[in-house]
Image (cartoon, rainbow, N blue to C red):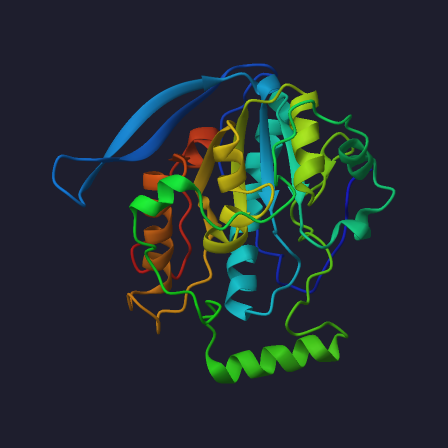
Length: 302
């Protein structure tokens, strides 16, 4: 059983990519990037670290890759990124990596799906961390830094006229324009032996039950859900998992009209650099697929 849900033309974009065929159980070779403080106050340098991960000890968590969003530009960027992300998931799944789909507030849509039952049926972990079921807004290491963007407006970067038309369109669909998501975008194929959950407790129990030490995080949005969810980067990092963000398989909610007044993509870069300094390292999808890292077509540096 695999999900086969369709929505309009937003997820019809298809990329033809060349990527390595990796044998089941073959070690995953990754180059992790950190930002390390230098002797000059406030200055950092990139540090690369080679790691080999056992697939059986590895999971990918797919954060909030919803079918729809209140920001139209966010929907379009998800549509652009999703085909490559699905290839990442297919490649790692074939090696024996556990894929955890975490479309927050949408898991009821998958009631009865075998992947939902896998998450629900994981036995309680003996070392369940305190507050693993809660959002995490900061970990101690972040107190050393300055948050790199102003997202107090919610981060929507739509043109106001287009945004109003988008909200009307969502309402006419019968969706709540402020929270229109109902499921994960259908480009990301869910297999029976994957897992589906948005619960920090369920996901932690599943990780412990499978003896999973390494986590790759993909999805949206980096500065909000990816960092803060109960299954997000902060919770995984502070509770001892070897968690890594795949930095070219993510996006942020940032409006260039807010500080530091850079374009949307450079705002996302600033968040990624902040994560590398204070939360966890990052990698790119070409380390799994070959070729070059993914870039959004409207990124002026593409």
